[in-house]
Length: 156
Image (tube, rainbow, N blue to C red; front, side, top):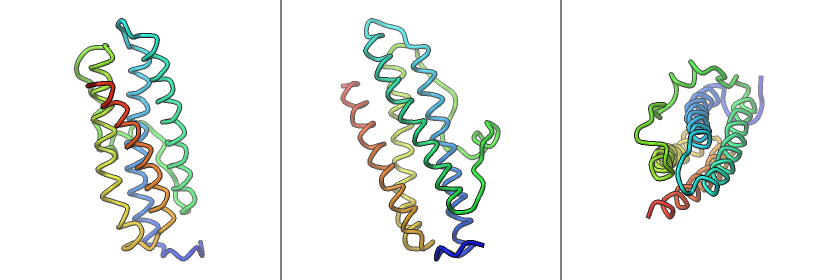
């Protein structure tokens, strides 16, 4: 039994919402790896390196979300089946293997995660009395916003 000032019920709700975020982050991580592996085109080298930066950052985010769930004394989902049941993202890809097509898909997913996070921050802090998770996902929001900005800049 934890005594961290958050009720069991609130921790359960927050852990479930974080599990959905974890699933989204893991699907985005996988899609970023796919883009890194299958990219083709005249900007291959530069984009291959950039995508490596993105998937490395995504792996760190996945781990940090899972650890936040564990800090709330819940188990993080860890199977592909669980991730696909929980995610808001689609694992389907459209378009080609050129950087423009791949980055458009990744941008769309980052924007979806941004919207989802933005809708959760106040609930974590206010309704569920978990300012720690609110602060944690506010940091993730900033990371996704910066990445989305960079992807948008490349696509102009």
